Length: 554
Image (cartoon, rainbow, N blue to C red; front, side, top):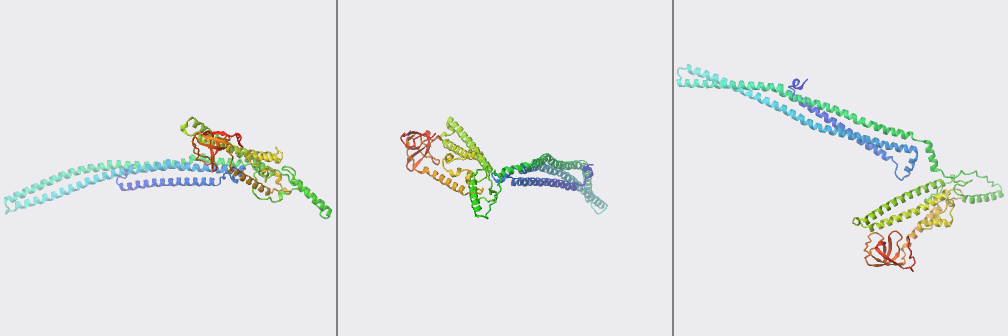
């Protein structure tokens, strides 16, 4: 079966059919392209869905994910995110392996089709030209034959007429011979062109057209094979991600099987356990007799006074705290408004967070120190003195965080029973951790316990106000002019561009109002309204031994 022999006269229909084949291929490309867009859109929607239900950082919602059921749900969200990624893989592979490849092939196919049909039209035009030449020679031969006959008849007529001169007869005879010669030439030309046309026509129908149509047939068959291979690739792209999608689904099943209801129940106990004992029986108070009423009132007063002295974890017989609404207010710094167990957890969490911050600041300080060493060894890379301020700031932050940690560790030790209830002196010592005295904040939690067992926030709020007032006073203590404890001479010029620093010129003499406390900075004063810090290495200090406060803070 060959189009060249079977369809030798269907040039126009083959041209339409091959164009239809290219249209079908382009339609399939469009189909695959829309499928890739759907896969991308589906993957995006899945990712957005997974992101929407992810717990927010540093929120109450994040704390809920300690339960196994919530962990399983979080694993499901993560697996769905991976599941969405596989649909993105499908889109990418279909685009690279099918869409891009077929689009390039379509362009090549169009070019090949154009070339083949161009050759076919050229062959058609050639045979049509040969046919026109044959028709032209045929008509010329026919015309010359007719003119030769007319010339012969005219000669015979002139020869038979006795009245015609011999010269006219001779002229007619020569004209007839000329016409006969032209007719013979036209005949020979017509015969030659006819033979050549028959040869061209045979080659056209038995060589040129079959060859061209065979190429078109092969082109069309390659197109059909190519679209079939693309359909197989279409299926294989889906099949390749099935194992990974299966793993995602297995992960969801595994997460579901990891749910432990007993563990979740225990977590509820740990989350909400107060550490108190259940209240005891309430004694019957008989008010029918005045004597008993007096006795019962005295007993009640004594009971209330005794209850106010109970510590966390002790017996609280007769308390009504579970049934009384707690006062609302600002949370105290030591979490003394919480039950013992919850307070211990909050304090432990605070200590852990502070330790993490300390480690972070220490890492930053070490990095700055290393950078300073590099600058000292290679001055062209930077000025070592430019890092002194950052290094001092990091050191101060570490010290501040350590003091804060010690304060919370003391409260934690108190709650855990490792330390006895602190006295006023101990509370003052703990207040020195941050350079302040606020005994109301460091009071034990039982001092806040109301006689009925509930926790009031009034003292907590009052304590916070006192702390704020103390902080406020301490912040403005430094605004009072400090006395000079010596003088200093600037060894180098320093441009104080940062806040808190002061510029000095080499050779300038200034007053020292605060020595270097180990952070690499000395506080100086030029006039009553102009003071600040300069790097200690930039000045030579002369302390007045008799001056108040002339001591080293290292």
